[in-house]
Image 1 (cartoon, rainbow, N blue to C red):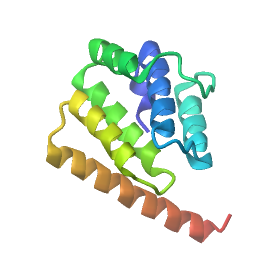
Image 2 (image 1 turned 90 degrees about the vertical axis):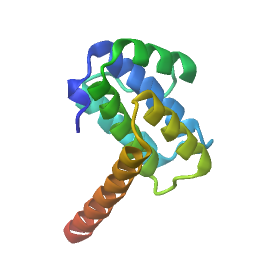
Image 3 (image 1 turned 90 degrees about the horizontal axis):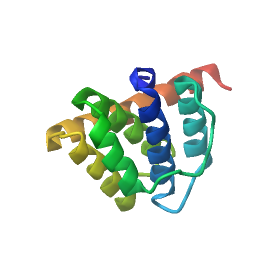
Image 4 (image 1 turned 120 degrees about the vertical axis):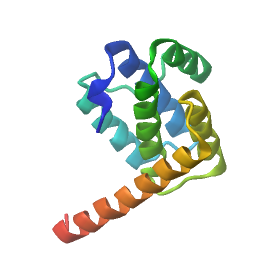
Length: 133
């Protein structure tokens, strides 16, 4: 949704972050892979499913080059990714919490975004049901 607002280096680092997020629960789902493919198309960067940097390096680099609004975009999109397979386990929650902290979000902000993303997926599913792929 908002990834086109990121700079080139942020896009590549965000892709690494997505790869780490998708692997955090040791289950890189087809839906997560599809979401990453959509993200790459939106950012107009080549697809890849191997991270260039460790998660810690990615977070450090993103924090160094990103403004608060960019970190909020990253939080929203990472949240969408981890929720895309309808599983939100403790490892994924901890991962999202780390990004929320980096983005300097309050607990209320974090909960609000997670709930909004869940609602958005319900709407998407209802629309897909209507279309009946």
